Length: 260
Picture (cartoon, rainbow, N blue to C red):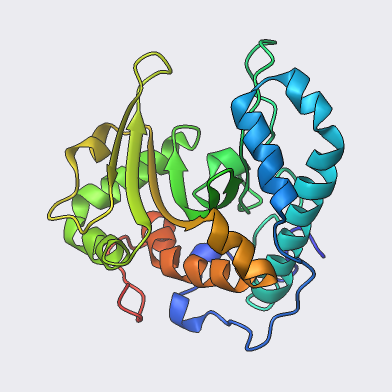
């Protein structure tokens, strides 16, 4: 696996209707296990470094190794065939331990996102893949660490609100999609969430520190999907791709020929 993809172009230049999806997937990921979710349950109950240390073998065997295989399958079946210029190896995964100045906190979820090699994961528009005790989620996010891109996304939403709603609302018409914004500090954090089509762009978007459009797959369904979670995730990536291009492509008002 190369990092980044050789002879690749800026991913935001790829319209969704030109993107290749395999008829048959080449998979190494075997699916998530009950052990992975049980481990995350314990970290949710005891979100501290001492619990993390007790879970260390399972963190590697039940979480990180399967997630790497899931990542590899996305690369082999999606990134490489489409020559998408993503960084796919270095720092694509989040950390369970919090960066909380030695307080010893621990997250109860693990997530990953590819990013363009001229940026960093947190500083780019992210198509995210996340496992938590509740299940698995795939979506698109732009946040405060990507200061310029968050400002650009807000500007493009402000300039073309109808176009943006045409991209978001078809997702919200289907089950388990959610549009979310968040803002403020840890002491005064605010969040808005919507799971039905929007009549207008929410006012909170203009002052948000982050904007999510995310699909949630519950724990039972995630387990049932097994290795085919990769197939499902790629469908969801295709669903949010027009939003990715809206945030990043040169012409903000441009829509993919798929109409989304």
